[in-house]
Image (cartoon, rainbow, N blue to C red):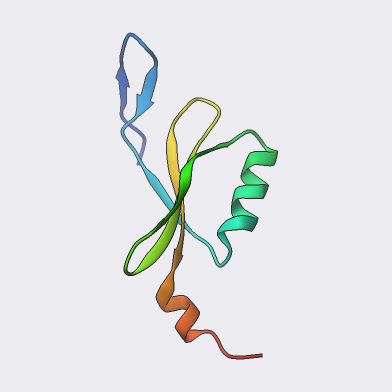
Length: 77
C-alpha cells in the first residue's frame, strides 16, 4: 500500500496515518527524536490506551501507542 499525497500551498501531507504499538512510549519517543522526529503535544490518556502523537522530519504525523490491556496481561516479575 502506498501513501496518497495531497498537495497544499503550505506543504505536502500524507493521508496515511501510522500507529505503532510499543511497551514503553518514552523509549519510543527518545529513539525517534534521536533520528529527527518531533513530539506533537503530550501523551493522551484514553480509556483503553495512551498515545503520543509524533511528526517525522517532513511533518507527517504518526503515533506511539501503549495499550492498557497489555499492562494487565504482562506477568509479574
